[in-house]
Length: 127
Image (cartoon, rainbow, N blue to C red; front, side, top):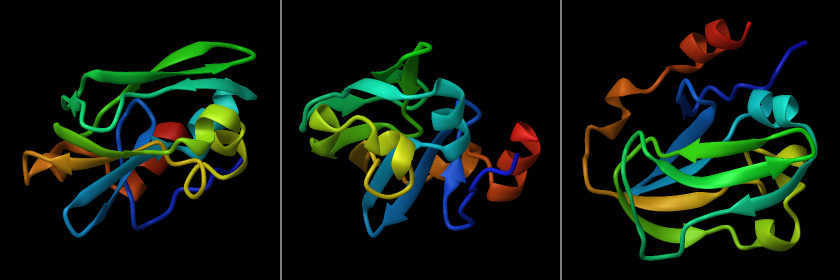
């Protein structure tokens, strides 16, 4: 099976993706992760203004099969939370790289992407 792995994103081994737009980092889970989870029924996310720490848990995604922790690829302050997921958690399944995004963070560390996987490295991991 082939999974979508956009070339303009960076990835964590724990299957979160990140994109950078100016000073903000957007975070979600990958197509592979949502497929492994199955139908997502609940998403727990931090509040706007909360701090997240690189490599630490920031929330939980619950599916019909499992409960999985979500890990932050960067340290910083949460500037936006995708509140649509509270009413429509299935967006994580139907559009993991678009409407299913989870958080936006103002990173406190500019070199935060150094330890993340390139699209090629992530593809190798999930094959």
